[in-house]
Picture 1 (cartoon, rainbow, N blue to C red):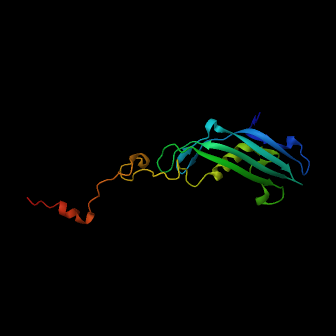
Picture 2: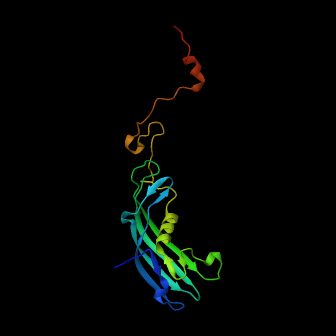
Picture 3: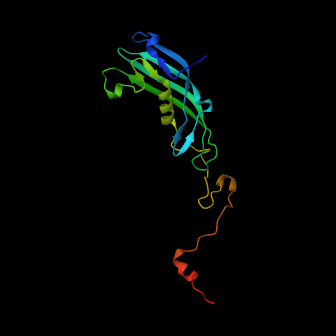
Length: 171
């Protein structure tokens, strides 16, 4: 059974250099805004696998999980229900510079919650849609074009260059 955690003390694993351990954790993941819309995770947590390897003087980390993402389609605003697969890696080598310093590891404490949220955000598609061929909303009336059918149309707007003629009173 997975352990629920926000932060994990990897120093408690007492890994020797070259040794690694696989952890199964229940990680809380907060909802977030993306493209002006609100998205959440069912149950607001994911079952994640965290691989921790002790290097000569630091850690190599890997986070993996799959989750359903609940929120609206960016085209039609219906439920999108995207499945997102996350596979993120971090390295923390003290003295290795900014590129070898993980923002999620402070001392021996790994902030799994923040890492899972950021990794999820990076794994999202550029557009969250209910289906690839979603037609979106009508730009004139706002009707869902997926439900409206191929006959959905509107009367053309009159040419604005002829607007002055409408003001003439010919009677």
